[in-house]
Figure 1 (cartoon, one colour):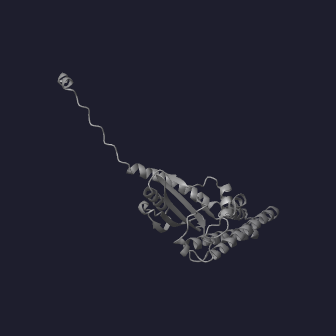
Figure 2 (cartoon, rainbow, N blue to C red):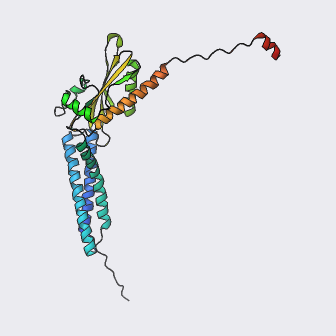
Figure 3 (cartoon, rainbow, N blue to C red):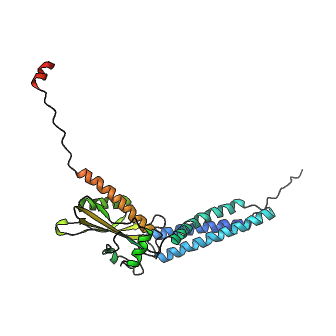
Length: 284
């Protein structure tokens, strides 16, 4: 008896190409992140690679949507390929969409400081910045006004501790984040030399390099800490520098309070009370 063969339903070519575009966009996006974090190439090739990945992700989504119509009309296979392409493409496009919403609501500034009148200066980092990077000089009063309206909580940190404790607290916070310190100068109140720490921080996703300087000065009976965080590239930081400055203020304050408590001399326990002679004999 001859066996009856049932032909499988053909696979939608649109769904296959949608999946290929999605996987290619994912690999290109990962490659761009690796290039940025490793520093093999300049930022322009890495951003161009990431932009190409987003383009292929969008094309993959369009092909997947078109395949839905073909699959429904002709009864073809490939629905799983199309859904996978939409999921991968959607995840890749979600991050730029989030940044676009930030760019719409926040001002186009990339240099945040707690002291716009006398901002901390980049000295050691200024010699390391590439020529095509943003200028190291502060943008001026226009940027300060935009910062004041967008981030009114950014103010100098005033501590009731010594400059040395504030400096040690800043170093501990930097070590906790595993940021790379470029230059450190401990404060010397006797000669009125301010403390300074210049470091390079990285953004969490793409690994962009942002430059940070922390300035420590005596103020009355305490210490004033000023912070400046600036992006090396781009006119818009999407709120990254402001978030970093606010986090540093909170962490340095908490760490400085803990160090100050540790260095306070501990009070000796009171001596045991002496028992009067009459009561001592009565107990016998």
